[in-house]
Image (cartoon, rainbow, N blue to C red; front, side, top):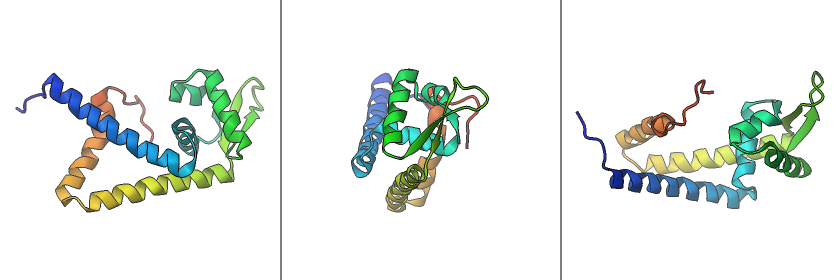
Length: 150
């Protein structure tokens, strides 16, 4: 049976992971001129066509007012559309516009290109181990969705 890591070791590893992800995301922020929340919302909308703003706010763990301001900024930039739900005029739906879809494609291509280039420099077993561990990370951190979306 393998030993569990000590608290200090665990804290250091988690900080290094957080630091790496933070820096990786900051590179995307600089590259695309959007803050992290905007990039996340656009990527979320690629996966959820016509999402209610309340659902997007819940996903992002934001108050609806904050999500609404973010959506308004992205709408002014021509990246998404806000519309009233025909069945319930109180609900506001969000969807990507063509320009928003193009940015999401570019953000995701940027991430893929950078990750695959870095993984290619690793030994094959290391890359496979990293990808397997990354898939488990939400469960290990206790933030896995009950119904994960693929």
